[in-house]
Amino acid sequence: MKDIYILGIESSCDETSFSIVKNGVEEISTVISSQIDIHKQYGGVVPEIASRAHIKNITFVLEECLEKAKLKIEDITAIAVTYGPGLIGSLLVGVECAKTLAFLYHKPLIPVHHIAGHIYANNLVKRLEFPLIALVISGGHTELIYMDKDYSFKKLGSTLDDAVGECFDKVAKVLNLEYPGGPKIDKLASIGEDTYNLPIPLNDSSYNFSFSGLKSAVINLVHNEEQRGNIINKENLAKSFQEVVIKSLTKKTMRAIEEYKVHNFILAGGVSANSGVRGEFQRLCELNNINYTFPSIKYATDNAAMIASAGYYAYLDGRRADLTLNATSSCNLE
Amino acid sequence: MKVLYIDTSSSYLYAGISDNDVLLSSIKKNLGSDMSKYTIMEISNLFKNAKLEPSDIDKIMVVKGPGSYTGIRIGMTFAKIMAWSLKKDIVSITSLDAMSVLDSKKLIIPLIDARRGFVYAGIYENGIVIMENQYIKLVDLKEKVSKSNKDYVYVGIQNKFELENFTEYAPDILNIIKKYEYLESENPHAVLPEYLKLTEAEENLQGINHDN
Image 1 (cartoon, rainbow over the protein chains, first blue to last red):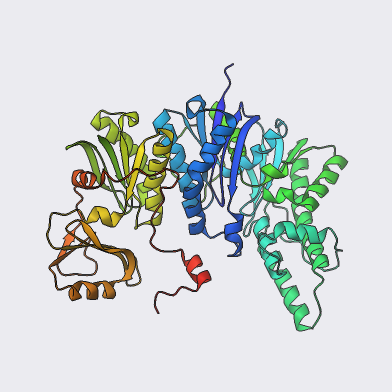
Image 2 (image 1 turned 135 degrees about the vertical axis):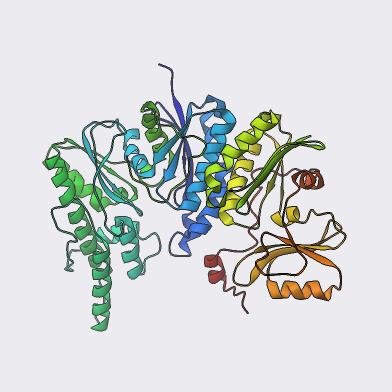
């Protein structure tokens, strides 16, 4: 069979990224331009600033990606792009770029759902085995997904309010940690003890999650301690908070694994880089004899390699978009 | 010389392909919020109607703003990617430069609503910029115009501010191309939108307050 090269494009939030992946599994080159240093001073991603940075970066990143791969656009089989969900202005730069290339070079255009991309980041580590349960946790998403074959998704549940990564960042803000605060909480938690009492959110029989209540509980706790003149032990609070998050995530995920009788579990998204979350799933999967995959740190956060990998399977599935493809801030994974 | 012209800076898509003194094909369409959806499809039709391929184009002329932030980036992304990938010459002009192309001896003042009493505007006389494109309070612009004691004409899309001597913008794409096609070509990496205004977050951080 002829080799298939997919050019992936990702611009849904604050990373401009291009990647070329061969046959869905072999990464040829990936370039990621992160805007983290720009947004840091605002305490979070500012959508219009992100859009402006994307258009500044786009040709540089594409050029570097092709040069690293020693390939020309003519050598590419098809172009895969994140069309949503994400920040609309940011997405549009990537989508217009993809449509332009598809038009100029007469290449098939493949729309890829951002969450599908996160799941397929794992396919670059190890070929996915089905059926599987995937937990996608990031600054924008918290989703529990069942897959019985490639590019076939059944959403079991998701967050009803804040995404887990968003909750990490907001709690970090309360603790006066610099944006993005998630990794800093992880670091503090690694030396802290679970001493603060926080409620496990949405501890019910659904597969949905909720993190805004937990965030409020932390804010109230800090406020009350300050009122009483007590000094907050940041390490311990980070540990207590992270433990509650881990319990909430693992409890529902392990139940889904059992109910759907799967032996494969994949963790995905930026928060999968959290050592506490990673470690507890490792322990539970070993205990239950579950085949466990998580992405390398490089592919946990937004990148185009995962879009190119997912794009390959979408391509095989016959999914195509025409030149009227539009970006969308919210869309279902189907 | 074959030139492709693209302006997505307002709710209208203005685009055309010229070959020296002939406009081979053009489009003027109010796409509103569907700009992102249809622009490239419309450009594809533009090529079909001109019976040309993108590789036949010698130069791309793109309008870089000011105007709709998202709108500008749509045409600009297309133009940058096309110029970079097909190694085509590219020039960028402002939307006000385009709007100033009018057969008149009067002061020409193209303006675009920038909300909260502000406009993006420039003043042109005999094809020359006499007030640089800027983000300016409408009252200040009006004062400048009246102080000049010259005959003038405002150019814009819909006379929302009920200005006297107002002309509705109806781009003469061929004349716009002819006026600017000999501008020096730019590096496609460096061609960027001209927003004429920082984002609110940047202004807040830098303590910029336009109302003072």
